[in-house]
Every structure is written in structure tokens, then in C-alpha cells.
Length: 112
Image (tube, rainbow, N blue to C red):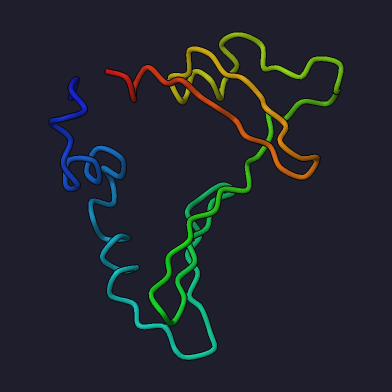
């Protein structure tokens, strides 16, 4: 799949989750959440999916860092494992507030 215009919902799901197919997506979509509760699915590693009684879906990935142990270098080394995994060519960091961080990624995969 080399053209973003050729991606369909089905092709994205099958390419992203080849072992599972659409099972997890169907499970989340078909789950009816009881009032005053929520449902949660573990997506592996640090990812979770939350669904509310009002059908609000929130996907959270708690991996929010590079695994670095020092603040001396703010940026990932070129071709860091997370950059390679995401197909990232370059990134920049912008601090809008002390508590928020905007990470802008330019990905080869998204631009093809």
C-alpha cells in the first residue's frame, strides 16, 4: 500500500492488526457499557482503550518518552528505535506550557 488514497478502513485494520483481524474492533464496537461505569481493554505494552456509557472511545498510550535517563540532550538520537518504528524522518519539540508538550512528527509513512 504505497498511496494514502488507497487506504480503506478495512485495509488499515487488517494491515495494523493482522493476527486479530477485526475481532478487537468488533468487541469494542459491540460492547454496551453499563451506566456509571466504563469498559477498558489492554492493547499491549502501555496502551489501553476506554469506552464510556455514552459511546465515547478514548485510546491512551502511556509511552510518552524516549526512555532517556538524562536531560542534557532533549532530542532523540537520529534513528532511535521509536523513530525507526514510526518511520519518522525528523521531529521538533515545542513547549506551549510547562505541563503540555506538543510533538510534531513528520513520518515517511504518512507522506507516501
